[in-house]
Image 1 (cartoon, helix red, strand yellow):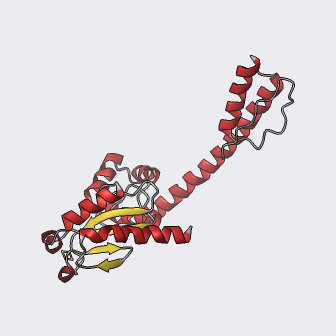
Image 2: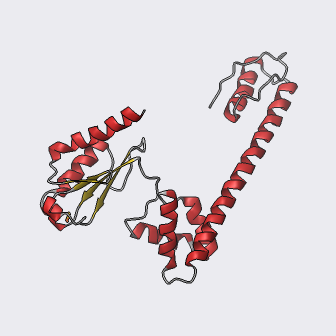
Image 3: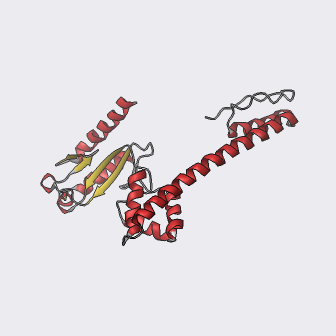
Length: 224
Ligand code: FES
């Protein structure tokens, strides 16, 4: 949380500044200089000390995250190492673990397999299944297979895109709703079909789209 401390006078001892975050500490130095024309030595020394403590802590957290990512990727790679086409299987395992393929994990995978990162992204973007962003809390998936297409699935996708303000394959800025399309979900008799959070809805009309979105938003509000 960003705390905005009031500017202390030059006589202020480097009091307890530990509650301030990094941005607030730097802000404090800038405002002190603007107000008094100089920064008391006590204050600048204390801020410098606190910033290096915070930086060291951040480095330690980052180091732990890096080693967790490395360990997970090594496990996936060793599991699939001997299999043909193992890159896809490993990417599936990564997506199952995180819900998408985080960039830092893709980078670690590139190092571990000795495969260029560009090649890994080629595969991720070729297969519609793989996601590069964390999934939304709720999913609306429109079937765009032949039967649904002929019954107007494109209109449903356009309506959803316009009401949610996102394109297919994207998630709303509040990460609440992810919009996607699939090829035939095996319910052609219900065309056009839409799957909302795993529930298949058939013969969907564009006029019903607002109701589906509202029901998700209502869920969000009742959980909040
Ligand atoms: S084409 Fe949509 S369910 Fe088959």
